[in-house]
Length: 477
Image 1 (spheres, rainbow, N blue to C red):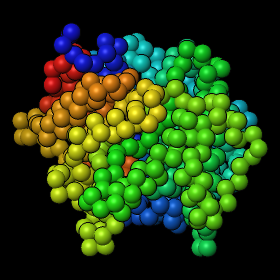
Image 2 (tube, one colour):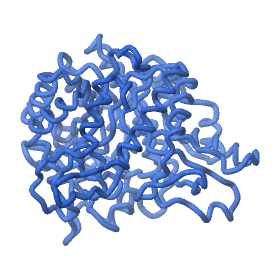
Image 3 (cartoon, rainbow, N blue to C red):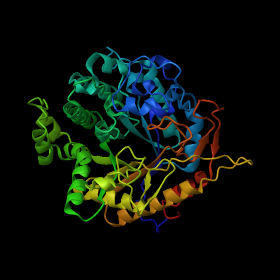
Image 4 (cartoon, rainbow, N blue to C red):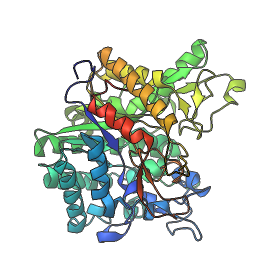
């Protein structure tokens, strides 16, 4: 074990989200959330960007989240498999609408609270630390219809109530928390990220940054509550990370790369440093954005900064100011990116860049000097079951092996990393496409894009590979 660069208490594990795994979408008193309105297919991307036709599910569409992989009923079976791999941690999210079905109910829903009690107990039985995200793309639909979601300050206080409720309930079971999953997604997929719906004539940028301000204040108030209610707890923010490379050494490209990075860093600058950076203030001024802030907000943000930086890393991005180069954009990655000629791509067009993982980790640590937690990283691929029942996902092993190796290099660089929870240790519904065939797991789930299949769980080749990685604390890749 001594030849490992990873700390002895490193949290190896996996990460899933309530809306992509649980299913049971109206069971136990749960209310509707954002993802319950997202079908598979062509409408999905338009809706995620805020072009929501109506709140009535579209006829003839399939809604994969309604049953997902039925983790709600099958978590004990799944937890046993995670324990077999040796997981030290599992990142999950709590569905806000399981606890407060409308988001503003007078009292929390006991059936929802009990479900997560049972889930956390099952994890702790195997010494698997719960790492819990408070909001992972699941604003209650009632709050979107009534208040326009995060554009309204009312959500700050409703979220604070929700946060305090779960902190009080689970304070003896959960020590690692995160506020908003991939908070910067609000700028790229505003409906998915923050429940924002736009109509003709809306000042979209202003609404997005007003919603961002409300989420940032809510995050700070949740951080304050966590520190008060769970003194030995740790609470972090969460960024969809991945550095922007300039396409050339033209200073215009380099500057644009910096600006693109800042679009994302803006959120973490506020959550980690406690104030709006100068470049953000200039951006608001240059674009005539009037962001309403209450007098007490500055002190709330300053006094309640996060303990660690959680981040997802799938790929780097590349940017150019040359109109000819920009014509060659990659189809994958939610973040628009010019194709990088030095890098391969996944089946879904996502750039594969292990070195970029080390670069991103170093940049985040240099910038914030706080511990990092890698809470998502993985490869979505179309896995085939062979005639003899095997699933040989060597391409996934290769991707993960290279990324874990670079994470080790980042640790040698002096970057402090708490843990690594790879994305989708069991196949779940894809957030971006709503597909099942885009699989990330070490465990295969018999389910297709139309919702057919037995839901049977089956180990892939990567299952034993990851088990060995954990057993050797990252020494044996």
